[in-house]
Length: 380
Image 1: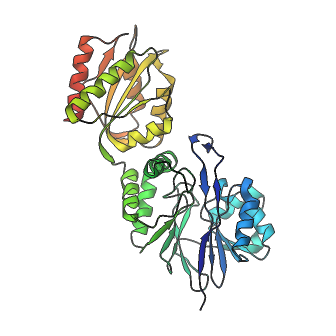
Image 2: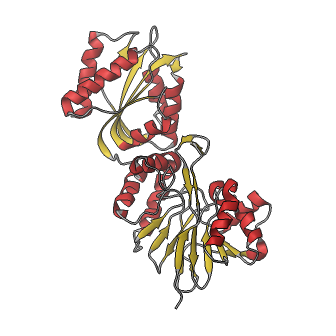
Image 3: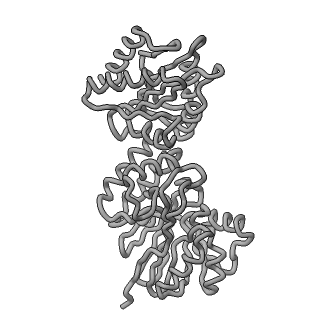
């Protein structure tokens, strides 16, 4: 009887500090899995910088691969395909039609004489191990497919259920999982919901993502988070305050609001100064909480650039189902509420607070009274 071996031959990149050119990270894991059965299969590759090390990892597993199985063609997972095919000349590529089109675009050929094309619902045998292909289009590229190992009850989930950081990172796992999902997959909630319905029918005991560590405990918890995030349901009842402030007057307003909310609830709401924080931490917070306060200044008859950028990123990710409060400041022609409201028009099911705070240069007693009422409106 064959004894099946399953291992991670991927790479921990401890050097990268900016993922995809925009997400601040403390390292990144590029996972690639190997199953050694009667036939040996490797799942996905790694970025080209680490291709040679990855090949060494495969060889150290004492296996000659028969197949390279592709779940996702983004270059951090596919850039070493040509290297693999050169190093293991007897191996074949197993992928779907869309992935083979991308392989040809990336490498100038699709390895036509060494390819096996699969589609949603197909079963592929390695011997004892039976693999079920589960199409997951737009989670978060069109060619993505998950693979369910029916024999060992493992879901190879492509980019889903991953997180920022290396596998050993000490960062808050849930925070990095949230920031990863909202940043990378957040736009595609409808598609994630469709895949969640598919995998709900499978008996899954472990999830093997392409980033982060293998998940073997609390699977229901992480699947539940994906269900909330992809249905744009608030993860927590509470308020996130997101702001910009040029000379400190808008900041005084939001700090007063935070104090008022704390007096009413006993909880200090998180504040995010877009001029200083990681913008994707603020984006993740807006999706985490049920209420979001946006406070900024009128700037060239528009709004402060960091806030404009932030609202654009919210709208791009289908921000919806939230209560929103707006605070504006302007020394002669406050216009920020009008601009922010227009930018948020494409977002669905937003409830705007009746108390809108208009500051003309500096905070007044009337502003303080409105802020007190706004705190009550946000917490009732």
